[in-house]
Length: 170
Image (cartoon, rainbow, N blue to C red; front, side, top):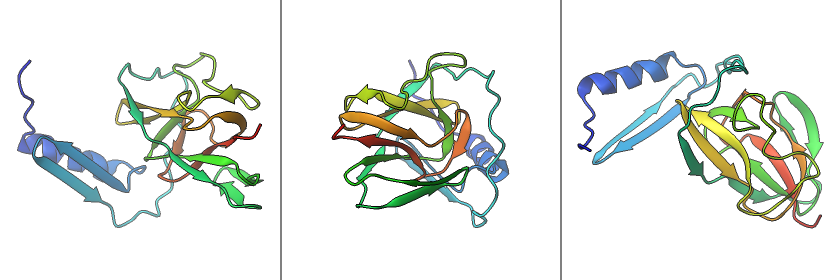
């Protein structure tokens, strides 16, 4: 297989795509020795409408590190689409490591990766975040029981958005 080359036209297409996409405020691409960082100055734009549930995610799959953080005692978390949720002391929160589309299952109509009350191990896939047709599997990162799933299937999510809460003691 030959070495892929990023052309000037490719760069222009990427820039135009990011400029026209409402869900991106930052973009980083590295191919070989070439690195591209793009940031929009207007990051207050509303997120795009949720993707059509009948659209099957493509086959590409990349494991991305989730942002795992132990929650401080009495911490109250909120997400844009949901009311505030009190995070139990010692619970682990899984936050989106990137801007993209949240999927609870590997394909439309399939059983979700995890349900509330389900016991998970550190390597259990809990969701997928799609970015530019690339599927990024998000692992639980800890052992415990899922207490909350805070994002809706096919919902646009931002970097750092709270997705799932796991109680490692349960």
